[in-house]
Length: 131
Image 1 (cartoon, rainbow, N blue to C red):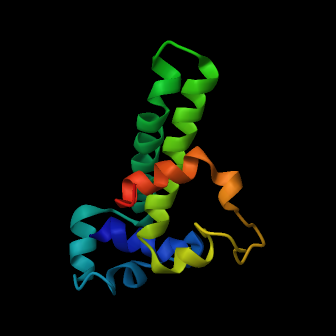
Image 2 (cartoon, helix red, strand yellow):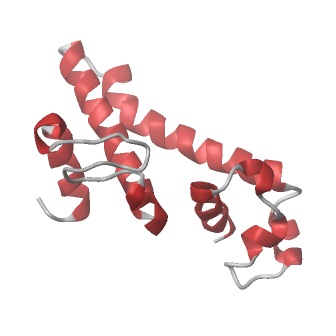
Image 3 (cartoon, rainbow, N blue to C red):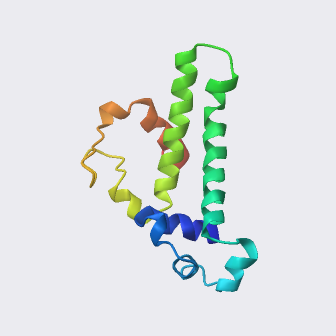
């Protein structure tokens, strides 16, 4: 719950603006609950980064560990990374403006077309139950 609140905060704010109060406001838990689990905000960030590292290693496993055509394995791993990014984006309502799944432009000026998404779009549909 605390890590989820921290991640939600980081979707729209830089780490330097994060405070224990800003994280805990959305959890309905006290500051003392924060300190039971974490010594400081840097440990929260370390935990988030370790979770991210684990997710990356899991989806990169086909490319790193299996045998077969390297480009196919790399594409499979990159598709997995894309799906992880989409899943993370879906966990934050604010992220929809930064990472569109349909034709159009994001706030940053980046746009994705259905043609450019190809197999990655199909992979994201699998995780959302729209396959």
